[in-house]
Length: 202
Image 1 (spheres, one colour):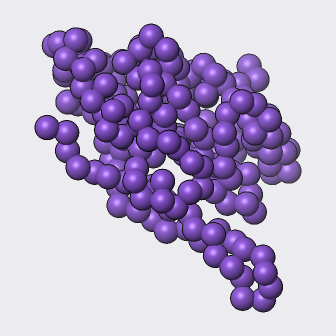
Image 2 (cartoon, one colour):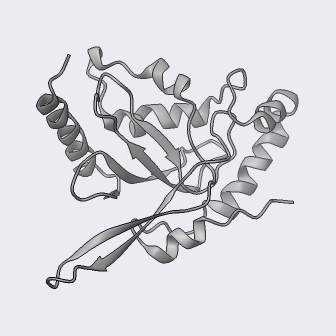
């Protein structure tokens, strides 16, 4: 098993690769590389196309032998994504001793987004050099292209997909329009306030 130092180095290496990619990444805790937000755009030729989501990633201490937890901060309609997810708002506040700033974390009311861990673990394999960036290059695009209604976290979405795929696609597009069509600015307080809207779609 990886030692603590090797595990930490692996986390930092994977986060660095992600930050050097085309994805927009925001470290929610600048003192460690285990919590971050990543901007993700819906894959083309799916009902999620045109949407932008802020995805929160938490990497466990025994990463990569344990898969990271991921959650959609703004709402998404998907059988394998929970509608209730505890998210956090990060504000930049000045330190009293000097002119530097730090990030202050405030928990927001539960809202959309944790992804089914069983679904993640089916594809996560540290023995085959699975890296954090693969979550965004491969796993999430596949998850949105091929939802699995037989292992749901959102029973309503799973039921609708199985009964009426066309109506499911329309519902997805409604969510995209209402919750994922705004400009996502990583670490921006105003944007976080906007995506926390929990009003229902009629």
